[in-house]
Image 1 (tube, rainbow, N blue to C red):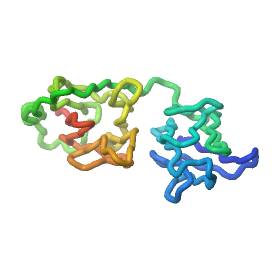
Image 2 (spheres, rainbow, N blue to C red):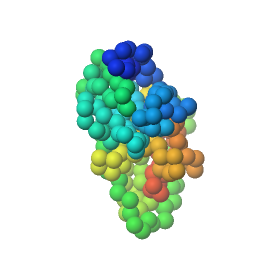
Image 3 (tube, rainbow, N blue to C red):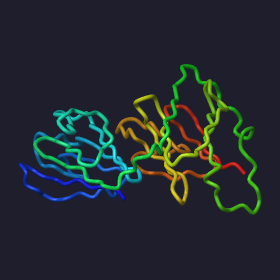
Length: 227
């Protein structure tokens, strides 16, 4: 199960925050999931992304920085007992049921300077078999539709797959019992880095359907279920 944050100030416990949402924000302004009223805290200071039992912390270019166990961080996978310091407040991460296996896989996607026109999707889409209404998630794949890698495929075999540049993943696809869900790891207010079927995904976790077209920085990828 997801963890929680124990919130304290000057060693005085102020309360707990369960990490029960995929995306939670920390900051001074209204609208943050965890609001800290202190001038040392930026309006939107940091972000927490929780996938299954694991949580990841990201600093949102805050003025005074975000620290974990005394070290400044940009992005940090949280471990049980980690102490987050924001301004003069502490948030201790508690999660005794974290997954320890290597459940994710990072896929490197490099942007191409000259993108080729996307091929005809009908050349690559599988034929839907009549009478097969239940989605076979084990047979789900991604296929690149444009650029030099057009036509290449990736089978979604693991519970979690990250897409992006090495060390700066921007998209994650998670396998759940009811389908695959895509979420943006870098939710920049002025950039729509992730688009699904022409619509910006934003901070939502969006369920993927057969033949959905995903756009990541102008790179187009199709999600499909093989027969």
